[in-house]
Image 1 (cartoon, one colour):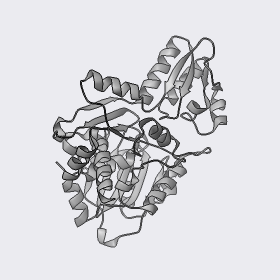
Image 2 (cartoon, one colour; image 1 turned 45 degrees about the vertical axis):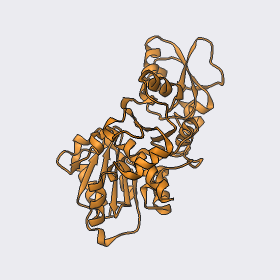
Image 3 (cartoon, helix red, strand yellow; image 1 turned 120 degrees about the vertical axis):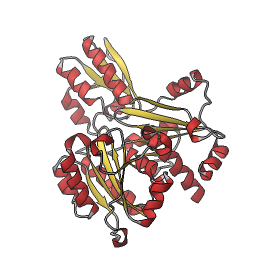
Length: 352
């Protein structure tokens, strides 16, 4: 066991680590005094997927719905559109509407009305990425201790009323400019512009990070991967259910970020993007023209080489079969982001 993590857990107590994606929410309860292999873990449907399921149930029942709560992942958007297309009513509080779009007029344009109270004959649907009572109950029923700290990751596009793809890359560039060390990309408290992470932080009370950073840290917590990056530049790819994020890493520091929608690139297109990305020749505008988010680069490092060694994570990693080494930190690929969060936060605290 990493002695830094071991010491951190002795000082902190049990830590609940959550990696909230579009398809699943992956959870790890790190417990002091136990080996990694004996830490309890869960892979559950994501909160957004559960909301989508509830909306579809109400559509079948021909019931109106009222969205309340706060900002969260917007993966229920298609279910909401289908509900409205069926001629059924949908109402939301202003806070809950932020999970649909940053621009209230766009939400109204979809046919969603605004109300602070549940309209008559509508069914409340609560929006949140983290429900403390759910996790408290699950751990209690499992005879597990309550966490002393919650570390959580979710993808945040930032607040952008007129489109968020460019804004997302602005966030990556800001991180690269501030520090190339991905462990520093875990926020003790996120900036107000990261509205989803801010809502998550307010619920958990603990540090938060973007899921792209979580996956990257999950790769680097493998000692062999980190050591390889000190010999030559490497490429880390997280093929998620919705987004594919690749990072160029040299000496443990990030030199470039690429992000695209997983379903928008076939293997040939993705490999060509990665080829140009490794060379530093892939403009962000070109990626955006293909429907992706873009690229962001730090200072060029000639000594890093071509970033050829490739390490692959993510639930859609089979798309890249044969293109690099598949990683499963501590034997569990789905928990890579959780292990990365814990490793990054513990090491950042130790270095502070």
